[in-house]
Image 1 (cartoon, rainbow, N blue to C red):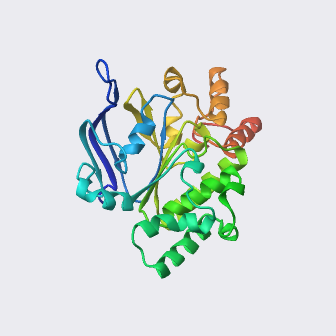
Image 2: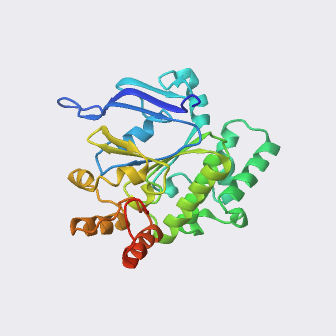
Image 3: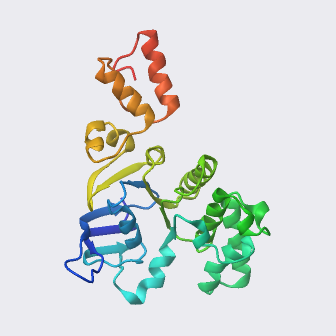
Length: 289
């Protein structure tokens, strides 16, 4: 496999404390993310997942260990711009990222700061808005958009800087179900159609289930790293960490607890319905599903 686009090696991070010892938020985290992957990082509040995300484009720097972006040490101050060209960040509140009074001007802000020529900026803005399905809103005022639309504009603003990787830190936390679906559909399409590496920080099980790879964090450590279907099979283990599993998995788990031999690999409602359909037909077996 090609060189990791993001790599952490025994990463340690402590926020500075004015009195007493600073608590360790990340404790020896080693992780490699390769180009084109869609990785979800799941954990409860305080697990360290958002702190980890902020290391991916040098918003935070390690207290110990190393972080590399496309082979560049994030502690190399002379390469900061190179790092942030590689990895773009989208945060929880889109209002904090929107800086202009017109959508297309907001999307142009990043490439303008990178010194991109005017004609190329125009092309990048048009392409970015098209990629997130917001072309018809180019001349709109951002503050009049819905939450999901604002977050898609924020994603377009990052896309216009042409990063190889987008890190989204709880991007749907402030959105209603419609807005959440808009943003997740956009992210999946960018990953699938443009090959952009996606790192999604979330506490929503259904969002984590849509990734190709799921990293679970607890108390500053990585406690699981595998395909979502495999991670979510460990229902009891996740619950001891204060985490739930997607509802289809929870339903099948309850059936297993009551003596029904069903697999726990169905992550979506449709997949779960397929399992139950076979069950009702009386032909279910571990090998048949």
